[in-house]
Length: 401
Ligand code: PLP
Image (cartoon, rainbow, N blue to C red; front, side, top):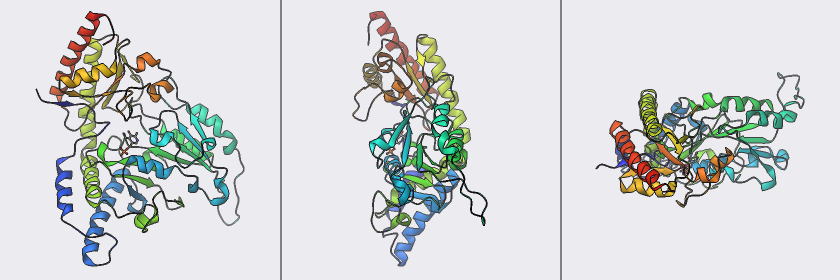
């Protein structure tokens, strides 16, 4: 029996052209900062990868800051030093309750500078709450300089809301949030790790000021990501990693060349195929979900009526144990995640499902399936066969699996 991999939100397999380009890049030695011809050769690989990623997200090359992954990019973005020195003491960070832990902890903001934005039971950020919260900023007077058109006052507010959630796949109303934040004179950061390759031209689409992306969710290598900064009026005054001035002084350290080359190729490949690929994978996901509901009519699919990423299904059957089922599936050669697994692999009450007011016992039953480039209809068939046998066995026993 072949292995069925249904955990693309955790990490996607390396795409073949990515692997080939990385192997080639390992032969190009030297430092991208060196002025000699060998250094320039490395620098040109770096510049090509930057342009490919920039093209995919609708940015320009100078907007891209390569990092060691999505976690570092999120950490880099969340700093009061985005604002001028005189405003930093009053800076406020708003993060949604369903963010990845690398955002939720607020990084370089003090605890008392952070406010959590609630989500509705549907798993969508409460836009009306945010609008009311930021209303007083929006009403502040505009700064008028008689030589320039009137400008909105800059307020030291950073709002961080992910474009889609990694556990449920529920898409967030980022463009609407951007409007509210900009009206209030603030900045918007959006963790786009799970939507890269799923939604075209992320930067214009989200209208965010800073976005985070990661290579290994789209078939690139692990340990590479980027923070993309909309325009050069946003200054990263205090880089997380200070060093030799790489990445236009925004992220020190000699670049991970092979990784960055791999990210560039992954961006190019996925950018050229994403719309057909998304339609193909969504069809598989819909078949799989219909099959689950057919076998287990008591299953609850989180966010079923919401706008969701087409490759994700997060579901639970009351009374079941996700932890046990993940092991049972694994014994049947099927890899998936429990909806609430934390990084240690232990099952905890998922902060995402908790924010959606899902009861703890149901949250402990949540499984997350995420499909991708190598998924096919035989995977759906094999999964449904396994699910039927697990479900029937647990129901027969009449107790939690
Ligand atoms: N943000 C989200 C929404 C994620 O799902 C992940 C990884 O699972 C990250 C950030 C972290 O990215 P990386 O693994 O590249 O550090």
